[in-house]
Length: 217
Ligand code: G3P
Image (cartoon, rainbow, N blue to C red):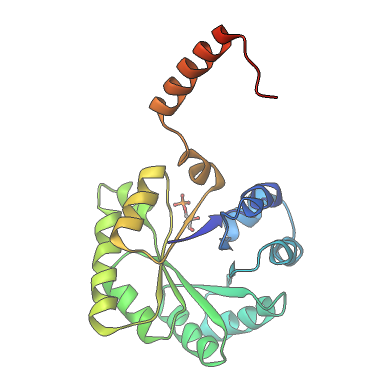
């Protein structure tokens, strides 16, 4: 499973990228707002750090304006994936932009039917939002599994990009189901390293080691 980091914070992207943990980046209007930076400027900087797809989101409601925004965002760098919402206009924009050979990430997906339409419209990525479904007592992971089954049934090449990931368990669950990509905040990716037994074991090893009085270097 590929890891995308869901942030527009340069320091966080750099730290994970240096460790080989970043296969791409996703941003959205809320993350751009949190960064406090200009969308084109910060996206360009991200694209200069990361080789993989960097999603930049359109904000116009209508298909024509969305297409114009997508083309403008795509000028930032060759690895831009244009993000459009899963509305009827978003699907129209997806089809036009995909036919132009651009990467398109269809976002705000909350149902298997929406994912089916995005694949038919030529999406490179479909972004089902796990956490926001879980927030409503629905099952975000079940949606990932349904989309996997449907795409595999018909050989759709659209990649399932599990989004709105809130915790480390979401990462392993998405990987078990076979999501192609998971995008998560840097803190969630780092939290995947944590285990209470690792901390406990290390503490006991270091205590015993100290009692030997030895040094390695
Ligand atoms: O990639 C979409 C993601 O940013 C949404 O996450 O936590 O705001 O639901 P969240």
